[in-house]
Length: 404
Image 1: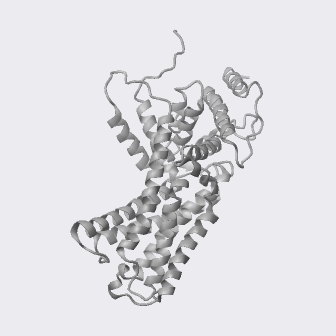
Image 2: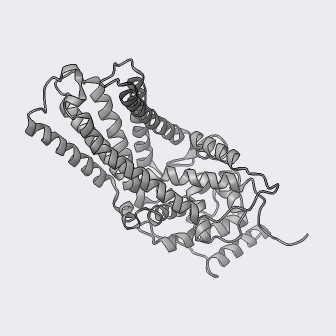
Image 3: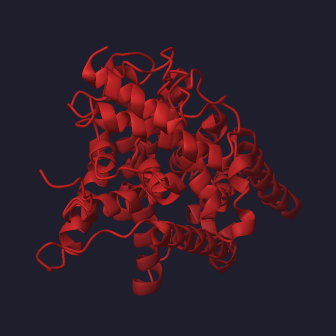
């Protein structure tokens, strides 16, 4: 046994209380403390090896620590992008006796942080129930409610003068339906991420005493918008179903994310048109809100289809299989929102307009309602972790390893 192997073996034994674990925890419903303990065990061994130090931000952040209490584990777990590069490169991955699986261990802790920092706290358990079946059932139920309301009113099918949505659902009614749901979603996510941030270990003070928050925030935003850490650390992409590198996950995430932003921008601009200039919808196909919404819808549709296929083909050791229903549920709602919006735009001059509008609004409301307690949270928490790392890397390390 080489000196490095001996060091790693000793780290593994120390992390496991003197006994090296031969089997990783089972996939289903690992308790939060057990999940945190597994990440601490894994990182103790990784800290002795450091083969993956250049793969992503997790590993250089890891090297600034000798121990991994819960706060540090929560930070590192949300900094992980689950790209899978470390799993496929690791010589100690299962079936090795060390059974190191960084992506899976991190994914389990991430889920526990969403629940643990959720607001209101009593609703944190909704993360465990926010799966594909629930999301689809909620969207279908809300859409059916709106469809029945129109049917009882005798306005479910028929041409609408000027393709005016507000002749079907008055503007004030739509605002009353969606504003509280969206406002609560933003509030719940905001409070949750603030609670997460306050629980993180504080960064050391700047070496020169100068504030570096602006530069750190710019770097964190840059890394998040580019999805820097889905490149595998070498620029060739991450792993999905096998050892081959691929940029497909990165591209699918980009299409979905920027498509969502364009659709949000279209809605925001339409709000400015309505309240700021008195320009009431519907808007022409060549108007800026329609162009933004159409391009965004196409990107979201393509991105979510790709994400669905990649998720279904994902290597079983990557991520937490227990979270797959939540992942697929979120993808399904995004896909339904984008596709129903595109169909509604294309057929708004037909008698199908009322039916299509009811279906689209039902899916959108389901997306907003599940947003604070579903997969959407991963982007908010990961953004906070990226900011924490961007600040930390600019500060001197607090490790005291003794004098040479």
